[in-house]
Length: 228
Image 1 (cartoon, rainbow, N blue to C red):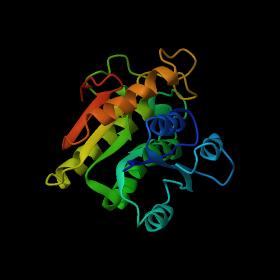
Image 2: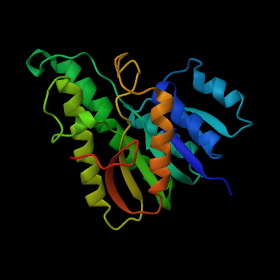
Image 3: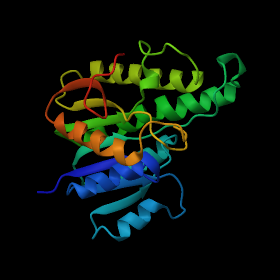
Image 4: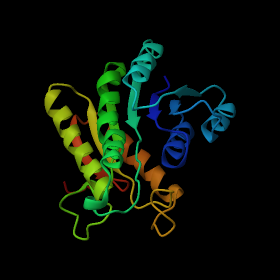
């Protein structure tokens, strides 16, 4: 029986590559896009023989999240993975406008956990729930500063996942915060060390290797533990 992954935020870059990797591994995939425009995920769906379904979701909208849950009510997910990340420039925190800080925190921390809380009932009892975090969310590893708002948002994401894990400590779900590495994307920039093709297969392999192991871990794309 085929396994099913829901990749939230799969229209481009890391999320798109993760959806493609799970298709390559033989999974059925549901991928979400934010708007109504056609994306590369739609193109991937066209060549997937029906194994990839595209859904619409703005993760900052609880109403849209609830509607997606209702549409998927008859599906059981082996993997729920939330990929979300925005940055609005490398500004010292004193120069970050309140509206910008709010947008980054809502998109990168609050909304992923709202999605997980809403959709967790769709995940198989021993399934996996994962979120794309970042080494920049590690307080221990922050020795150079920079990207203040983005770092704060990813640290908040990690803390909220800790809260989630504690709240559902009796559940058997595998819980993962994933660091994909420093990847050449719009967010990572052209000077990043990794290509998407070097990062994402490792992300998927690490996720799959942890299947059936309850509890929360913060891991990188090579399966190594990231310090909190």
